[in-house]
Length: 264
Length: 317
Image (cartoon, rainbow over all chains, first blue to last red; front, side):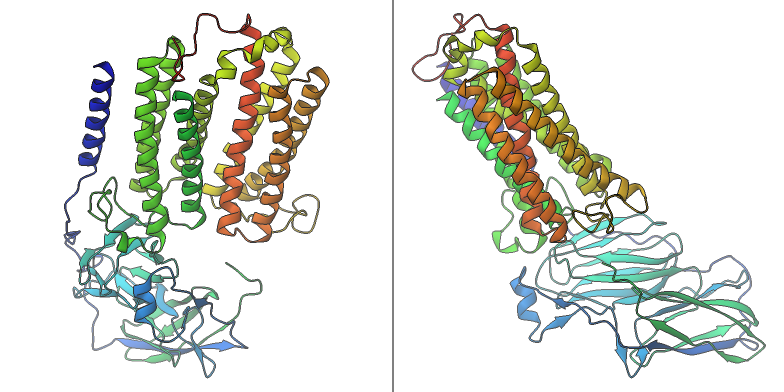
């Protein structure tokens, strides 16, 4: 009798433990914070005197080879990519470097700017699209899963709150906002270790990401002297001082080289 | 039967240690962002078709941990109901408490994004729990209950053997903690070459990660010396197999462990080499523990434990 009671007790505990791990399916929607609006509360930029800073980011020498990606860990990812996939670390074409985040690091006064709409990062083909982009403090980031497989979107900021959100369902969207400026916030998927992206969070709209032609343009800047920084995920950062007058367009060009030592 | 079940639980715990180490070695610790659910599913009904990428390791680890937890409930209950040795009943309860605490720590590592302190504590408690399961298996063995035929009485006053065995076990555990700290602070390749360090016998520069990594290499040397000293003491002082066998096994395991450690660095942390290095470390610890416990049994022994009678089903009365 004692032994029977023991086994009944064991089964009861096992059942309770299973129920304790219960969870229904739920959408993981974070309501966006109110934000994406003006920074600083100062005057708006006078469009009649605003100027631009434009330029090209070049790459000197032979670019290191991008690492090939093995997607065997998830058959859905293999199926979604008919051609071999490579990391996007060095996007070099005709001596021009893409995926460089260029922004105004210093020199802006206290201006307010129009509230921007949401920015989207999409998980498609088990890759992040885009790989590098910018967003404003308080601006809504829509994280979308377009793949018929699970992803987790894991942000590793230093100045903002870390988050890690599961997106098990195709079509799921999760919203997030950043509360502090930070260059750059890495994103990764812990399910698919090859997935990575970088987001620059700023409190103003003067940022751009170079395309395959290496070009960038920062439009609508008030006259003044600015520190412009160009950031690349492996090649590091470079800065340039640019002074623009009323309605002037000035150039700021950058040239990156491969880093001296291999980094992981 | 109880002894066999206890050995089974200890064996399952080895698999759990391997599964846990694979989670860290594959950087899959946050591939399941929620706990105790799995992407919103009950963890026991999460579809196998979705065990992809890092989820395979993290979710697999949670399932194995739950199984070991359930087995520990059974073991603790069995000990409570059948053991006449009061301390054994409470050891079973302690093991159950440890595995529950392990589960909570595991959940906290996920909820708080793998903070180094909690992750290291999770690793440290895993080793303690494994020691408990091995100790229970040892204490329920007929040979232990029989007092090794009364032979261990000979060594009752051999404090030297007890001290060196106990010290070695403590050193091994400290080395495991340093190793866990190294893993969970990303210092595993802080010194990227082996056996030299940045091409020299000593690091040419220092930072916290290099210091932790160096401490682990220095600790390995200390463990090797301690194990050799223990084995030498065993060989000098006794011919009994219950001491010589674990001492010999300890030497073999330490050689394997140092080799695995070297190849972990040289392979730039190959996930399997890295994970078996963790498992081998746990086996070094428990082998040293078995030897240590046997030396302590001699201190308190007056021959076979006559107050305990081994029954046909393996339980004691």
